[in-house]
Length: 250
Image (cartoon, rainbow, N blue to C red):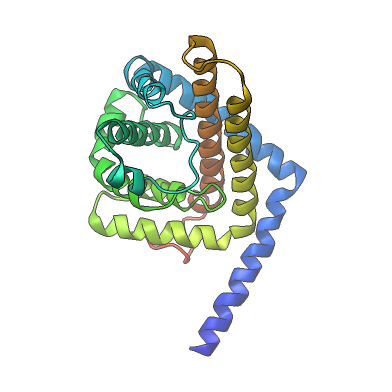
């Protein structure tokens, strides 16, 4: 047992050291460019299929409850979902969950054509995703939720795969903790800066232009964050299908 623990720690430290290579200028440049490309592709899908109903609806609810813009939280959604007073916060959170669901599907790489049928087929995974969304803390510096979700979408649709996805997401965060911590912290600071600037802006958010700006920028920040995580995920997980670190349903 002691030998196994020692071997695990050595392997983990080796992975942590290797993850530092991702901070090289060349690696960061490639990661950023690939993330921008994913951002553009996924944005076109979102605008095509969801802009005229889901995104507008969620923006309206956010405006109605006087929110700070989409995806500006740093913790979990279970507490406001359970203890929120009235239906408004629950409607908002469910709308937010569906928006994040379609954003994740838009960002992920897939051999399937991303038509309306693609989103309809993956809607069967929404209950599993909703459980993750409301239970797993969403902290940018520890992006467990998002990486679990990518594993969930790539796995077979089963309860066993759901639990495997949770394990795999935790392992991936542990393996590349130094890199993910820094990337998540950078995005977290951007979100905080976004919220701070908006709070200091002496414009009434109920005017269309300033609110639309706040709403749009928050979505772009979130989408770029998810795109960068997926670029990292593809490089580490999908490029090495023989890795013994991850459990895969056979």
